[in-house]
Image 1 (cartoon, rainbow, N blue to C red):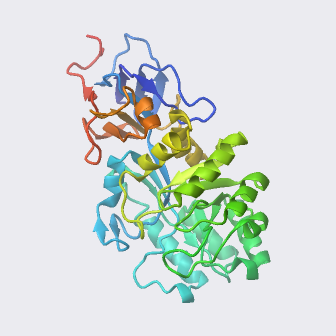
Image 2 (cartoon, helix red, strand yellow; image 1 turned 90 degrees about the vertical axis):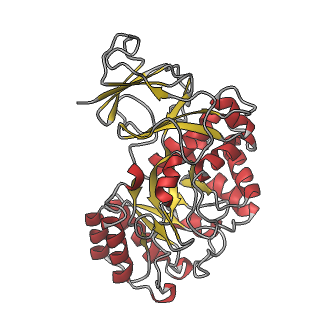
Length: 396
């Protein structure tokens, strides 16, 4: 058993939209879980971290990535991107389909091909902790002609998500509805590409009329990925549906503002989730999730805690994952960060509300310190968290 104590915490963001901040000045990690919040001051531990009054927040959950094999992305011919995203605070990532696989013929996809592609992605990219990150790869790109056997294969492989993007929805309504039911019977969630056509040029335009009958679990990048649906459709979507609505870095900023503010007005921020929708035509963006948080808080005027909850607990819950919320018994996936020198904010919350990029000191995944002292992808915070010299009681 290994225990790690984090003390001298200045701000604590829970990732839980119901109570996004808490009065927590220390926490104890035991193995891969959070053992206790505000443990006794005389508690013993194997390792101790002084947060130096920086903030602790959950590891970010990127709900929309497009991996291929490992850390290589042919979309931008880049390697190492998953580890770089981890240095930007992302500790969990969820594939929205391995659709950038070289040579993939979007016009001639078959049921066996898309199922096999998901199985291979799950057994390769999804098997390894790249940079320590929990990557949920193996999201099947649904096509006509699939049956129970294909969904059984996906369930056996451990896929958590399937996606409508190349599927001709309006021409195959009954089949699409049947797919959703077969997926849910196996604990697999459904996501659908929305708005205009994607970088591939082969996706289908999807707005409120389609989403109203399809009723997916998550409507992907509703504010653009890269092109959004109309303003009228966005309003109808917020007002007349209940499923999760995702915003991404590959977006239309105006549409993000509209959907975020309408959800806030209705008291339904619980529906909002977040991703980067990268790598792709938008590029490789290690700080993409942080930029999304800054936009929601500084422009859309969410509280910093609410914006962080959208990027963590909300997104994890929408995908059926147990990460994203810092509480006793939860996975110890967390980030220690603070304002950088020169920021308008004296705390992380102030910096986020102003739109200033945070500086990351530590990234911890399942209790393991992956980044120590400072991130390779952010400036250092004014106060840098660090390991304390003496084991045992951190106050000795």
